[in-house]
Length: 83
Image (cartoon, rainbow, N blue to C red; front, side, top):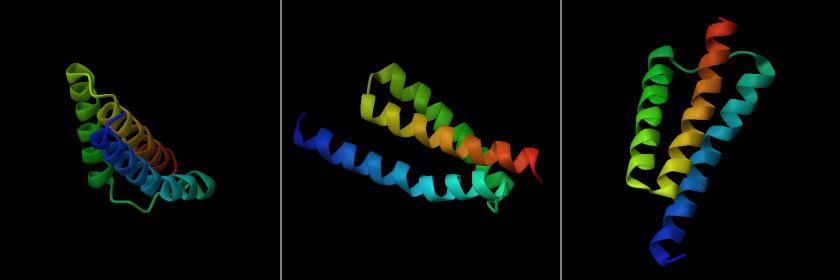
């Protein structure tokens, strides 16, 4: 792993971990305080970036976007299921 990959990995871990407290709180309380439009745009954008990063073969970018899409999709599901 080169220096650029290490920086990318650290960035990925920080970004993904920033969603973790919100996702845990959302699941526990069964309430998502985030704006619906924001969540929908975020899920779509992260999903598209996941596909793109798979196409270009960037593992760190793929993992970041996959986990971001997953966590935001969990928030979206809770928002839709428990209005």
